[in-house]
Length: 69
Image 1 (spheres, rainbow, N blue to C red):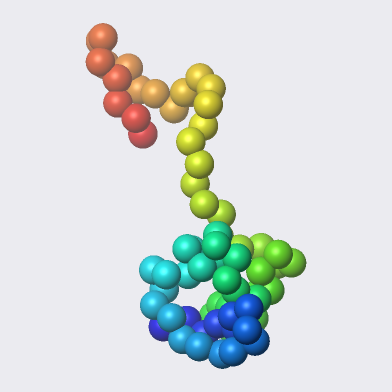
Image 2 (image 1 turned 135 degrees about the vertical axis):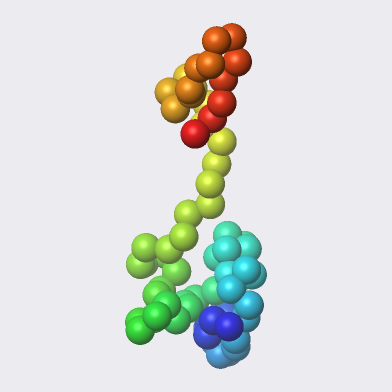
């Protein structure tokens, strides 16, 4: 469980898997990480992975097939 402060300035505890969604949906002011408070929008937080539009350079080629690393 992770301790958070939501936009209503209320403390709560949430499951870790919900944290990313709450950050992206702008529902948090801060959350507690290991031994410090992290302020959303000020401190470094998790980034959501996005699709990369461009040439894939991590491709491993096996004949005519390829695999991604």
